[in-house]
Image (tube, rainbow, N blue to C red):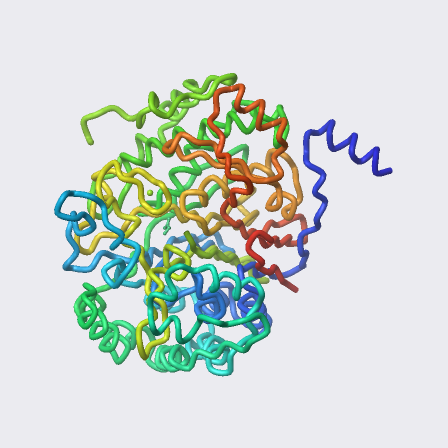
Length: 551
Ligand code: GLY
């Protein structure tokens, strides 16, 4: 029997992974940390809707997943209600009023580490206002009820997992902050991690709403700590922080409707451009994991990231050429420049639109409720544990999101991304992101929600999981588990995850790809939900140890 299965898998060129997703009839939560997933399921079971559950999961992750769950960072929430309404909430961090274009360059013009280390690396956090905004427009339960589970987790503590303990041990930044050291360093698997200062902040947020964080006691303490430590965020920066409601980017692929992240994320543009180049190419006929299909998809990645480097940034500060970047004729012309048998050299491939007009660690979760409302949230501190600084007395970690701006055109950021003037630092501006919360529809109904942490690799990982489901007919867990690859134009390297066969790697080298030689490159960790007839499939990415649960 096993031999026969192996033969069938080979014939279909589909890796025989065979892990089942979690299945549920009514509702599903998939998040990167199990206790937070459980909080979401409890809120849904007690009658909350998907937005209520998203608020609770986000606050819970700020306690149980300090690597990226946060109140000191920012992110995006994509919402699609069962009646078809959709919106995109942008609660991305903003550059403080005192930020300057060259603030991360020394006197000689060299890029310093200050965009990822120390108090000046933080943008003005947006998470708390973003969650409050989502709740006020779409929530159904009382705000305080939704914050309470996080307060309890912070106050009474939770059991430190092996993964969290290892992650804390491996963090180069946490030991640099006395407060982070006191709270996190030395936490061992099985210990109870209590965060009383964070519990106090969350209690105030539960009582007073976002006002506490932006105008109240927390704002006062945060801005005082910034001033005392040379940081830039002031009382005014906090008070003036605003959530922006944007229209999701939309597109189609083989009959599926796509709702995805608009700028200041580059993710949605990337997803739609790459799908546009793949559509009609028949790349999938070569089979999942084949050198031929990997080559073609990698070439679409290379072309998108070249465009990203030049054309994308905060739409409120520059006129972006989205219509040009997504025009079918332009995308087709980019696809036609792909040689099916030979890698294009990134040195010769330039961003594709003509002159003159003139992109860690994050976390993603999805929720679908019994009514069919769907939420996809990606939020972040940028690097794992952000800049590593816990604000004394407040118990939360600060982001280092300023590194997503262009510190200097041509110099790579922490994700190796080369970025341009359009993403230069300006006061009040939002840095270009790769976060790609995405919801897919089929025949006007919810079909799939997905997203991931992982910087530039988010966009390419979301693409591959979607293709695995739609083009390679994998069940959702197999689609998430299948080994992935990544190309971002510069550096001109194709990264293959462990699990892609050495023979395939040789065939890709023969096509001219420069492969990443460090084994086991970890791609972004995708969490996803799919509707499968009358069932929901949920899959968390075991690369990150999350949990899918439903009922
Ligand atoms: N901080 C990673 C991103 O937004 O892409």
